[in-house]
Length: 278
Image (tube, rainbow, N blue to C red):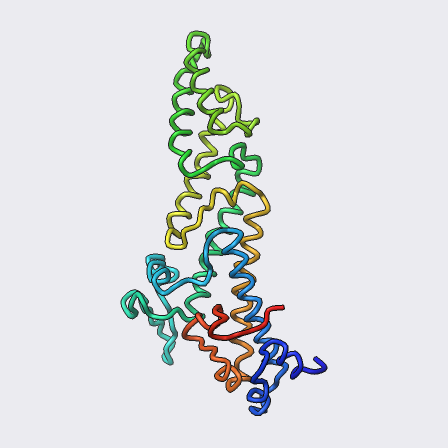
């Protein structure tokens, strides 16, 4: 980096001398601020594109403590005994969210979504309803598939129940008009019944993460969307850890900037830490 002071001035606009006077490496400070800018861009992209906020508020984080992997923190004592602490028992709903707290959320969210990705890839690579399935369709689809299977006589097929089957298929078609491989239901109902296991699993994941208020089903309508979301979650987590890692050499600069690992708000609020993102 040829002129870190110039780049820092571009990022901050003013106040660069205070950072230079610390004697700490300005190159590291520049890289840290760039990581902060990148964190903000990832947060903004996910919020605009997927409709939910990765920078969780204290209230949302407190609600997520119902997830054991986020709630319980394990620390190793000097005698190598492991001490487990429940955050729900040690914090209030309005306590600030630390970077480590947010990272635990990102890590578990990534694991949940990656599990769905693997489930689709390994067990449902040719899912016929995935591009149109919605959470509110699951129970009705189950009812229609079960109903038409009952009409299928062992010896006669739909010979005497064809009109009833046709009525069921018409409703099924109205739910999934563009899922051509799912029709006619009288032929595909075994596939549909099996595939519904995937959507029930997706629904469980969605309920698990209800405090974040995102709908996972539309994300699955496009095969690339889930990968895109996973990449952004991973990117944000990596940048946060990089900020922590770099801080050991620029503690005074971090203090001047107002970056506090115990509170993520300055990282994402340009009114607190004003950084030029262009």
